[in-house]
Figure 1 (cartoon, rainbow, N blue to C red):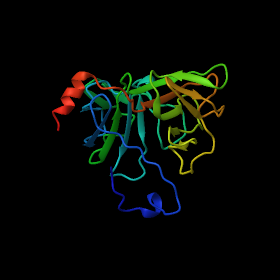
Figure 2: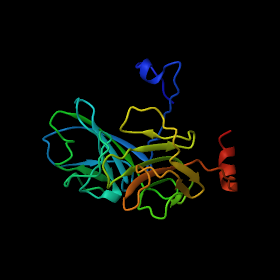
Figure 3: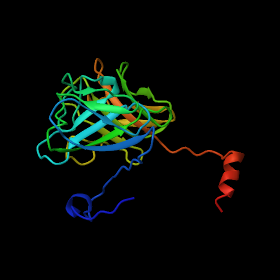
Figure 4: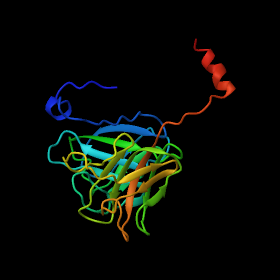
Length: 239
């Protein structure tokens, strides 16, 4: 867990509800990398996912006024999104060398400025655990998206349209939050969780619009199953 020490008015007011999401750093799921910028040029960095990242969130943490740069595998190396704006994906030359051991920033994404400290949050794309995908909806709502598991956390953004929100949803709250806005939770329910993915149930253009493309990240809910005899035997050795 974590302790809340400062910023009481922002994250610990007595009359306000809060939500927090915790991601465990582990191979094939989540990794955090930090680096100091050198010259503003292309740069290759290492990671510990042991699989190719599907989603990367980057930010300078030492320089005010800098924006978020976000990679998604379905956008490719030449486009990025940002929590700083509600715009569509843009800019060539944003990324390079996204592999199972390395990832790199290009010249468009300002993530290697000399002397600046940076942080990156890298998410895998691993069957049964985390899915980084996209959908092009048709046929109206509800619109079903199959990710191969029951999610507990979903992030959605239109990659083709400007003025659309980042929708943050989890299975503990019916409404949605917006990653790029300071707004309180929306009363609109954008998604409905299913055993194999999620349904888009709102016709809002931030989650459903025919002719548009939406990227998403879905993280699986914990599964409950019976232990095998081998696992039972291994557990006995702990006591």
